[in-house]
Image 1 (cartoon, helix red, strand yellow):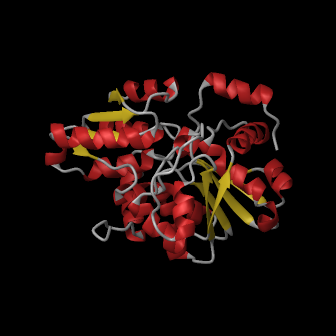
Image 2 (tube, helix red, strand yellow):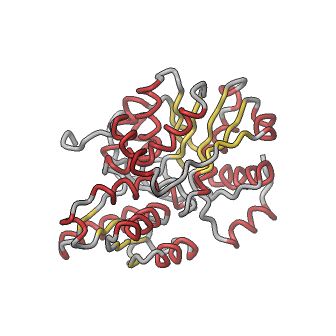
Length: 326
């Protein structure tokens, strides 16, 4: 664990200079309706408007930009439930790197087709992310691919940390930032930025009740064995807490809360009705958490990261027609 380099604020600034040539800053949208409902000033960081409709593309661009000629001579292989896959596929297409993605069975076809459209090869293995990850590691060792761990690579954390740098530069007076936690790079990036620039800013992470591995490890202060995964929010469906984000979050994050799948579905509909924005379940987790933490947030200036908008048409239609909003 000690051999892993931790992300730094300087690394986030370095990533900003790389990413600005490929990605535009995303909007920080004030929502009058959500502010009234939750009882605080609510701003949505719209990472669902990225080219891949998810925040992770920032990390992919930063990582691929650092590969030397040796790295570009062979395929990069990684595992993902969708958003990380699109990030690496998109960045690979920018920098001419071949990409192979191992995805668990059952990933929404929307995400699978998006990855293929970006030129990556998709390999299906396992029931959930960590089974796909283990297979990707085996293939990398067997075939000589360059393996990219989706959570233990600091360049990914520093890349996605740029979204929080954008929030801070646009709204330095922010009081609370809420970020979903799947693998943990987004929340790690948040802590790296805010706790260095202004430690008074409260950073709250959100995990699914059906995938609480990092939450349980954070509560115990040590990485716990793999946990069962029962959430349908594929962006949060991780069975393990990973070393790099755990080291950062153990020391720096202020709070981690759990939300149910029903909470996230209600948040998807609420976001749509309040702003017209489309969020996937994991992308709506921060909004679901804000409703759960209403009493703590009263009167504060709060940024909610909408991490992604890759949701299938049928699932979105079902939520909009059958689920009650907050």
